[in-house]
Length: 230
Image 1 (cartoon, rainbow, N blue to C red):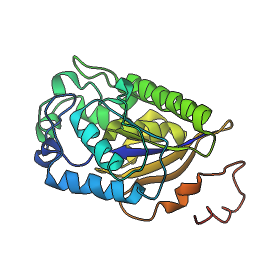
Image 2: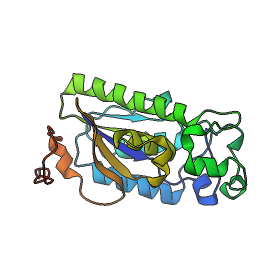
Image 3: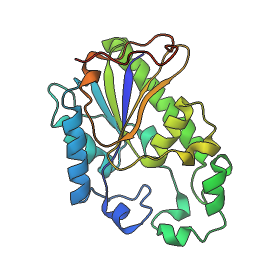
Image 4: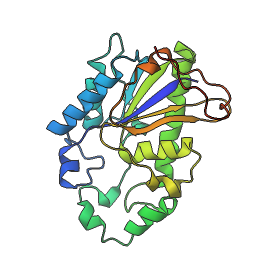
């Protein structure tokens, strides 16, 4: 299958003030977030992307554009509704410090699979829709560009964490063990037998080795020799 690079949006004004923005409109990258996203774009400049897909929210589309600005010939990032932020319902717009006093908070931390946000969606539904969207786009990019195609999905922290948990074979109740920082890069390749996770939560480092795609088969016993340099 193709290779997907999962990119979280850069830091926002809401992130900086500890606010759960959720799906609120008008939440944009702050100055630090723009710099973070630009750096991610620089890291990906050496990788000829076949496409960029984005959550519809402003912060993700801004991040996607900063990636596209450093690409040659990559089409504009289409919106994918199933990669949008979790619907936090009545939690949206409140501070994290305030939410930490709610009875639901420890359940979010220890048993996300049981969480349904008041007036919002369940975390299990969030994971199901986002994983399905990634797999759908991945199959489409491979069908059009071949198995060595590399593409980007720009989304949100909990969305990417849930996708990575699925790829790692982790139960959703363990997904809080995964960290996904602003503008971070995680890399997953889906195959017939199982997904392979090549990186999580990276914010620095050379990605040019992806320029030739990832050639994967069975997992190498002992770890193998790694990817070939471009």
